[in-house]
Image (cartoon, rainbow, N blue to C red; front, top):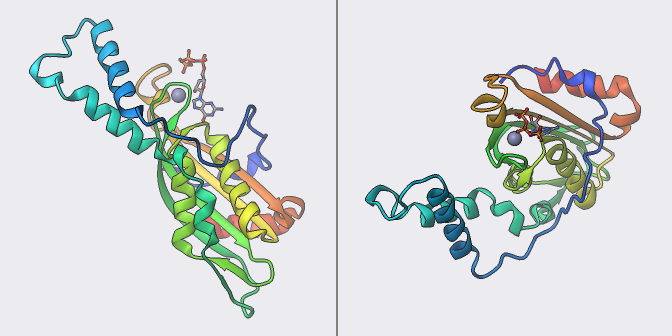
Length: 215
Ligand SMILES: Nc1nc2c(ncn2[C@@H]2O[C@H](COP(=O)(O)OP(=O)(O)OP(=O)(O)O)[C@@H](O)[C@H]2O)c(=O)[nH]1
Ligand SMILES: [Zn+2]
């Protein structure tokens, strides 16, 4: 992953278009069977024989794989932030850096992987568990995603449940749809940022937090 030098140029990020559900979708009871049937059809359309030994279990395996890597669809990741503590003595920022994530590009259903960095300024000493922020990132990543929407949903989730005074989210992602197909540009990294609260309006304060993220 590259450093964050590109991040400061893109604040604030444009809102991604389209519906942006934050909560859980209902998973159909026959989801696994339906995905497996669709995978069998893809193999057949490619001219493969889905009954040959090496492919016989592939549709079921792929179905389980999709339900795992897209499992964030069926949870509300904000629930993790409901584990809260108060710390009246802490008036500074909390920064969780280098949260590794795996996501799926919604245009090609190919992996996106990278790191998220989340900073917030607690309001009234209201904190959440550090691991809960990583779980929030994971829950929103494991969906068919746009990187811009992922960045925005992480910030919105923090705002909805913790209502901090400020939030800064930086996401660095490498998109397999740019590496292994299409433009074939391996190693390029996309950086997206969202700033909320006083870190959106006060650029000096934002730069201070951004410097800590880079450090
Ligand atoms: N903004 C944004 N674009 C993305 C993301 N993931 C994939 N894309 C882009 O979505 C675009 C889809 O473009 P299309 O022209 O519809 O699809 P395509 O013919 O497969 O495009 P190429 O990738 O250029 O071959 C591509 O430019 C992708 O790089 C993302 O998270 N955010
Ligand atoms: Zn893609």
